Length: 370
Length: 239
Ligand SMILES: Nc1nc2c(ncn2[C@@H]2O[C@H](COP(=O)(O)OP(=O)(O)OP(=O)(O)O)[C@@H](O)[C@H]2O)c(=O)[nH]1
Ligand SMILES: [Mg+2]
Ligand SMILES: [Zn+2]
Ligand SMILES: [Zn+2]
Image 1 (cartoon, rainbow over the protein chains, first blue to last red):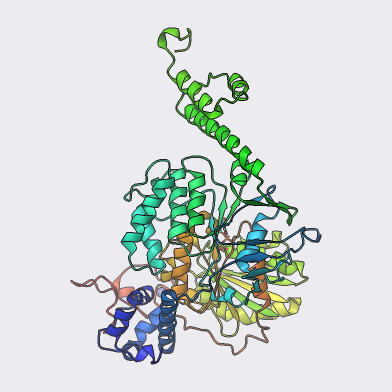
Image 2: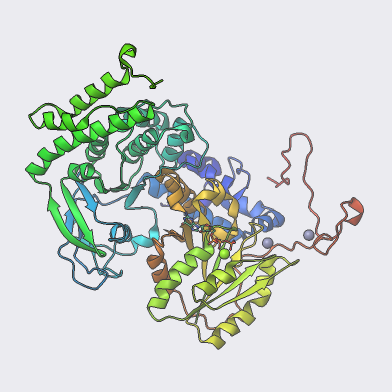
């Protein structure tokens, strides 16, 4: 910036930085007239008005400048492209050195497994805080192979990790459309409407039931909320790392959800107890007692087993739905399982059996089964 | 001794966050105490005690709690020194959203929470705007998008402050918070220190105990709404 922003006519400043409206709104001051400068504005303000806001004249100018700097940074974040994130080995809760560290690259899907309390939050916190051997685990985080200037922690523009938790709560009372728009505006995005449409369309490719732009976010089903938030994180959010805390296999296509994040070159960490989700990842980090116990590649055999597991999983989902639909589950699973070992498609067999038992021939219905 | 002032709207998570951070300070052999300021009553005393943290409580009663805070700060500082603390925290609930008991050269922390609504950062005023360190609690209860928008608006109001997320229940982020407490400057004394913003001189007849609502009984510092046509009720603000 060559000249002092506080000496330019407000009209010019408003045209250059449309977001500046928020500055006056957030303090509760009226917008200055087009032709006066911020210095003049501050000088004209009544002592009493400033007193009401708990501001001194000089503070007002300083806050204004800071605000503009924030808007400039948003327009040009100047972030270094992340090619890799390395977490070096530290120590576990008992002070034992960790087996190994690991390196993550954009587009990687890595699962994090281990019993509750085994160190998931600590690992995440280390990444989020860009630990430099200065946390209790002694781990360091390297970006593109180099240690990070801890000063960034205090600039707080950027969060490295976006967290998608299992219980997806919304507290705002907005429609899906307004909700995404609110987020897009906070990210300084120009064509908000186009992006909102893209997010909702994308969410609908992974959601079981379609999300309507007008539906209130608090009225969305669990699967729909997750789909919307994953699409939002992929397309609107800017954190390079996405941590997903379990995705239930209900109302959402998990494979497609992960693929979407991979296409957007996110580093995806999935904390899970579900073997299907764990095996969908290319690698898994096994935690124990606060430390990294092993980092395992998913083997071709495991990928093959995953296919069978997914069918089983599909079967469990159809059983769950049948139970929800007030059906009785009369299918002899034992027989289906036995048959399927001979090569019959397990899931289809169960689904077929389920659907035939859903509408039993009324004539054949046993007595007492009203 | 390092004096650290913690403020924030009622129930935003101040006590939870401080207790979590103190666990880390204690683990490193630091001694810390707390003075809690409130209006009418507080249960915080019990919670601090249960965590083994020495605590004193000041109830302001009919006086503005922030004014009360300022007039008692010196005493509290002396108490902390007498106890041989390494850290003394004060906890105050900003009740009028206008006063900010932040003092120059003393680490000023403001705790706000995601549940309080998207526009809250804009409503809080100097307490948030002038804090050195802003702690955002209860991120576990909202979606990632809401968390990001809330952070964005907080940063709009306080672009210079350090903003961190701490979970008062699980303690996530509290080790990092403790490391920031460690970085605070030693407080040589509080005599002759200065507030970062003026406190409103809200003395009217009602401040002094008047209970009858009538024009006749209104004296002192009175400010009236402008409800005339074309005005929304806010005070005319010139320009
Ligand atoms: N879910 C969740 N709850 C929290 C979090 N932090 C605090 N709470 C809860 O919020 C409530 C208020 O927390 P306190 O720590 O008492 O808040 P405070 O600001 O000290 O409240 P006052 O001193 O009464 O103004 C308590 O029930 C806490 O358990 C958090 O990060 N997540
Ligand atoms: Mg409290
Ligand atoms: Zn006040
Ligand atoms: Zn009064």
